Length: 142
Image 1: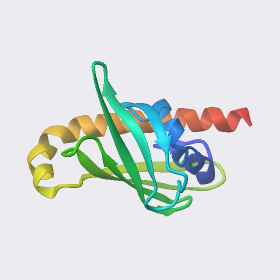
Image 2 (image 1 turned 135 degrees about the vertical axis):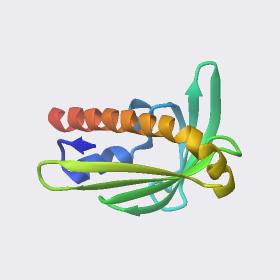
Image 3 (image 1 turned 60 degrees about the vertical axis):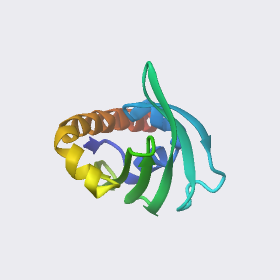
Image 4 (image 1 turned 90 degrees about the vertical axis):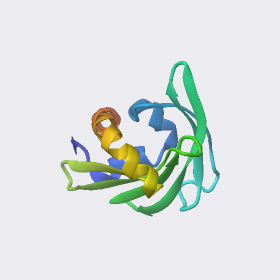
């Protein structure tokens, strides 16, 4: 997804867990953020889902290479876990943001991935569109 902003501006939004409900489809509420955020191993605690089903769980920062890459371990119940890698590359005019999601449990992933991949792709694409709009809104307000 192309974003009309420098990679640092995109990364500023990605590193602020409180923005996730504004751009990540399915994110409902950020309940808490560890004091160590954004250090690897730190977590933010969230609520995901769509009414009437809401799940309280967490996301952990696995790796960071600012402003190029953010890797998160996402958990939404004991069985639903994934590693999400967001990459950002660009120049002083714009950035390209990509989001890849891999099931944490390979066996479960092999079974459900063929069914869930189309919906995951649509959700991630919609999330990146919302992220682009939020970043552009923030950078044009400055």
